[in-house]
Image (cartoon, rainbow, N blue to C red; front, top):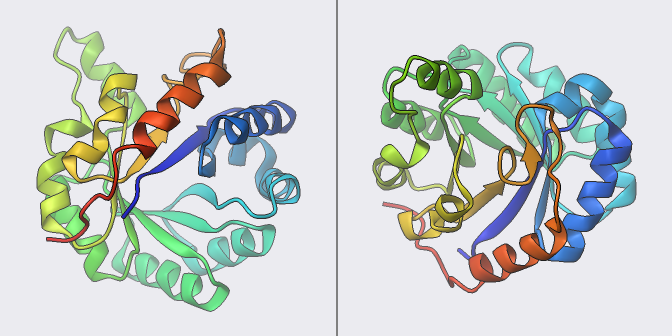
Length: 234
């Protein structure tokens, strides 16, 4: 599988999200993500606006679904989402409902293993229930809370190889990665590279990062796309 670059629009204003998305597209980004802050702020309206502006671009709706899975997927699919996210800590029936709705409405399902007691087993469980992708995820609050205690901040790279080797579906790593770490994800067997807070978004204010972001993104995309095929599946 060729590497895919996804930008997470973890913003709270649709106009800024559209501006950032347009810049990302010019730079060579492949997928857009309506991040959870954007969905909370703008809801279905935000996803519809992204779809109207970018009719041919895959859009990930980071719902972090925990319940009511079928309806949430139906609503986001009809708004224009291409991918939806369900949490591994949800009930198995919720994951099944999300997967069924995905099949019914033509969207694919990304299963997120955040806060699983065993991240590898959580990923395998999501695959067994029918998810199409795995998000190997160390949460924002978890990272910051542990760092505030003076301890080493956990990274999704800590177990990324184990997760990749445990499943047959594509994996992406999310959670506090530096630019250098994100660019290296294909080396770990994870072809879906997510650029977001704190890479392209100010993690504290959830506003677009300062500087010449477009030029930086273009270089990042070129480097990731030049990696070549990433073997997927154990």
